[in-house]
Image 1 (cartoon, rainbow, N blue to C red):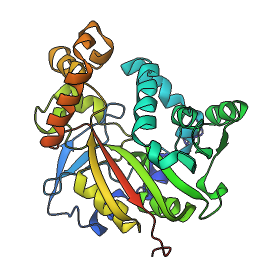
Image 2 (cartoon, one colour; image 1 turned 30 degrees about the vertical axis):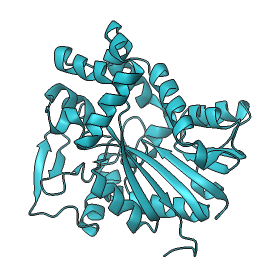
Image 3 (tube, helix red, strand yellow; image 1 turned 60 degrees about the vertical axis):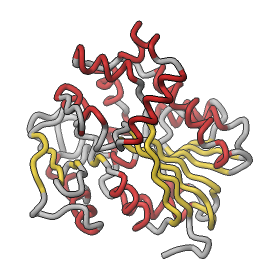
Image 4 (cartoon, rainbow, N blue to C red; image 1 turned 180 degrees about the vertical axis):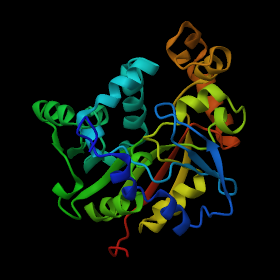
Length: 310
């Protein structure tokens, strides 16, 4: 154990099965690996790899441990780097509640890694029943006080009891994603929907512009895997889901990209430059990024097998 009572890297590294998972999915091999970076923004000795054929970016043999997500201290560190995320949380919840209402209206749903529950709060008025799954204890207690059911593990949800399960920017944090996806599938009724959002390895600032400041900011010890369209499709399909659809979504507008290029820092979407982000321009910019497969986010929408699957 470390001096703070957290498991050491040596203890935790066996839990990270990302490289093994990518090899099973035929997305990486020893012959096609290259070093993408020799450090992350928070750990100077942690190597990040990239497969030069599939394009996936990943961290091998490291996991911060569940305790990190239980106490939530890392969120304060993120605020120190990029500022409070109240605006982004609200914007994401609004976008998701509009984009995915067909999957939650009148349905029993769960949000895996729900955080402060912003999406569940937005969806609860129209959903039949909502439940959050969250490790951070303060969020669990706050949601319960607000009347929203929140549990600490998927195992607390009855099998085949959900119509839809949402997982927003959580899959990339999981050291054994195939096992977790299989658990998610077991909680869905036959024909139930899985909706997953993940960061995109082919983000414009990484793949086309190659902004080093953005790369240094994005590579984080907790981001164990940055997906491509194909890697996300294969992973969700391998976990037993059917009808897997992959879509590109742009969370951050043109003003944010301009600020990264001009000032090498985030936050342009909350600056005076954000006046450029009219609905028309934002939609057109997202469409252009989709055309070249360079959005900052990928979304998978998939279906649990009607017969129970593999």
